[in-house]
Length: 262
Length: 301
Image (cartoon, rainbow over all chains, first blue to last red; front, top):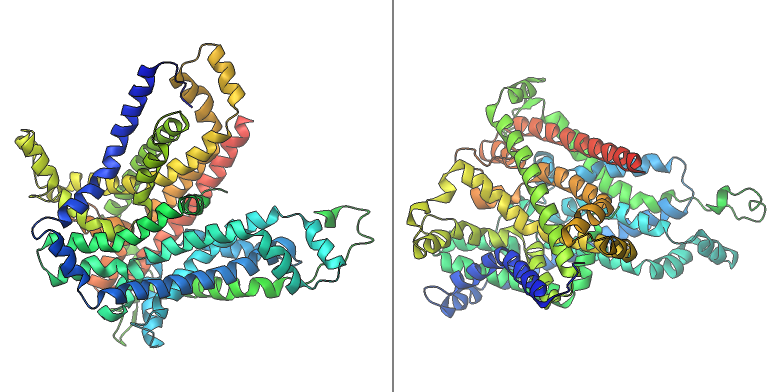
């Protein structure tokens, strides 16, 4: 965007960019550096030798997978219905859904806690999966409906003229055409559920059931004042998602930015 | 849209009923969420500790108490300060990065990755390092001492004003990547010929950003304003994990206040009352900004 006529301009802009990026990198460097203080790599050996550690990852993966499946089923069927099918008073239902867009998770704290304990779901992964998924659906439906609106109605009509029923149209016309938005929603929902902190904190009591976001606090409890091991555990938890992002840059950026594109 | 075109109706098949398709989303999401909201509304009229069978109905007393609670009002003020300052910083940084990375500079992907990594990391993962950086014996004070600015070193988190600034900075660190990606896409849509014409007329780089790019990305800026307003009301993870809402409520937000009241103090009824107020504020904020933004757009045309 900036016009670069002279080499000196380019050097100055490159320096400006580098200086502006420093604050973004500094905490990451401090994190890695801090994790290597004291016993050096020994901190990582301690963290990785914890028998419970794989369990945190497995739980986070199960929660993320279940949330993605639930959200995608609700989102793709609903956006198809809202966009392409005949529903009397559908905008009322749509607005009922959109009203939940602004809902902060913390607002649900008391009723969820009461309900979860009554149903005996306390300390099970379901107590996290259901609210996290329910909170994402309004937003993903809005996103997907905008996308599905862009698919020409004639395509659906043509399939119907050829004798396909609604189910077949959904499966053979709609889903193949909506792959980009499925990918974007998938990544967005994955990040949000993998990084979810409040609901696991509230509903998952025993370390065997906890998620990766609770690992740093687990280590704070285990190694009281040993910041180096806490930071090493944070690096271990953060690294997989950073690697995933670097390999799937475009999907991540599109998925997370999709949020604001109305 | 062909459905409403007269003339094409003759050959058109009647489209099948769609309500079974929206049912899963409605039952699952709307059902769960509205049930919870209704339940919160009911709890907000109780004096209840969350576990005991003893529930006492107190009517609107929780709400009356709320409006006389100085910490509630402080949380509101913190939310407003947080919203305004993070909005300004994210917009400026996001736009500057977007323009810089649209220029022909080296290693653009590398810089982009560095700006975006904080977005994908959980607050819970990065909170320990921020506590470490700003601790009394932390990295920041070490650096200040190393460059001879000992006098500036202090226990940052112990000071209310600095603690709030830290919460704001961590949020800007974490979400500038998103505003950058949004602006990057928007700046890419600006017609290059307009920029070329302005350049021929003698406009410099800064003039082009101010007079051509900034008005062109207005829609994105409004979207970011909505995200920031609602996001600020939802703020929980950063103050909870980095500063713990302290020192002495200096970084209390509505989310952390609800958690403190409901979980730590076991005043679930009062917590529910704050939740209802937060809910109303979030919806009102969304409506105001949305209609205000739309009107602005129309005025522009």
